[in-house]
Image 1 (cartoon, rainbow, N blue to C red):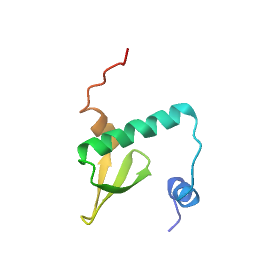
Image 2: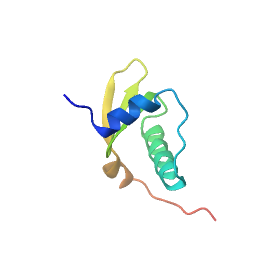
Image 3: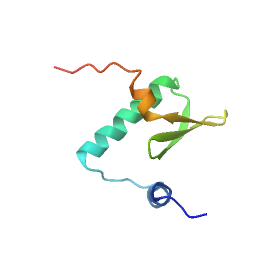
Image 4: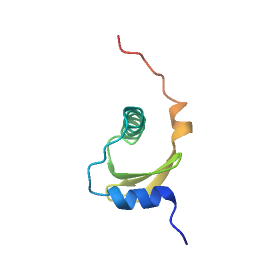
Length: 80
């Protein structure tokens, strides 16, 4: 079974600091904020796989979140 591009990237950056363009960094930050909020801060790690995130919980197994579905349940407020 061949690795997907995201799996290859994950294996290359695991445990390292990644420098991302601002727009990508903002998207990742927003996604992590969603995940942190809906899981009540019990996440051990997250793996991004295209539109889905695999969440690994502390001593409770793993599950997946669809980021598009998740974003539709949030209300965005512009900071002034």
